[in-house]
Image 1 (cartoon, rainbow, N blue to C red):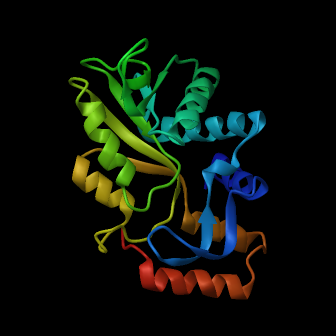
Image 2 (cartoon, rainbow, N blue to C red; image 1 turned 180 degrees about the vertical axis):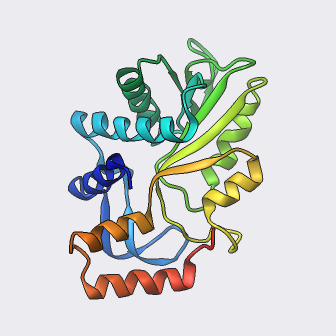
Amino acid sequence: MQDYKTGFIRFMLESNVLKFGDFTLKSGRKSPFFMNAGGYHTGMQLKRLGEFYARAVHDAYGDDFDCFFGPAYKGIPLAAATAIAYADLFQKEVSWCSNRKEEKDHGDAGILLGRKLTDGDRVVMIEDVTTSGKSMEETVPIVRAQGKIEIVGLMVSLDRQEVGKGGRVSALSEIRETYGFPTGAIVTMSEVVDLLKAENRLDEKLENAILAYYKEYGAKE
């Protein structure tokens, strides 16, 4: 596992963004873990978060793209932080962009914030975590409606590796099948578990709860 992946897992735990216990997800599933990207709220946290995203994007998609798109609302600071970090780490100027929840009809009018997408633009989507793909349902049509836009791929922070709403493959695989672009994550939940076990930070009760959860909801791909 790359050093930045190990660093990101520790970063999530230090920031109290990845938690373990008993949680009820929006889907109604009872989960022994929960990730809330809203827990990143300081300048240093956002700086480091952007760096982790930038390294993962560079590993997955290289640097042949023009813009990071973050679905409103949580994706807005993620896209901006990633653009800043990418310029710093890889000396490449990349724009950021987001959708508005409601289209603005005056001043800086339109449905987009940040870069105005045009024909030929290549976009990387940036999101925190996805379990249902709902944000992609809302934003992919918006992005593609701006012209001949190529979506290079999607990057999320954590792949929960559980079945999506179709009940067959993971949410990330469902997005890949539905929209035809690659998907990736900074880390997967199996990588989180492997590190916790290696560092003796996973007790038997929690490990059994995670195993039971994946026995019921785990995705094959």
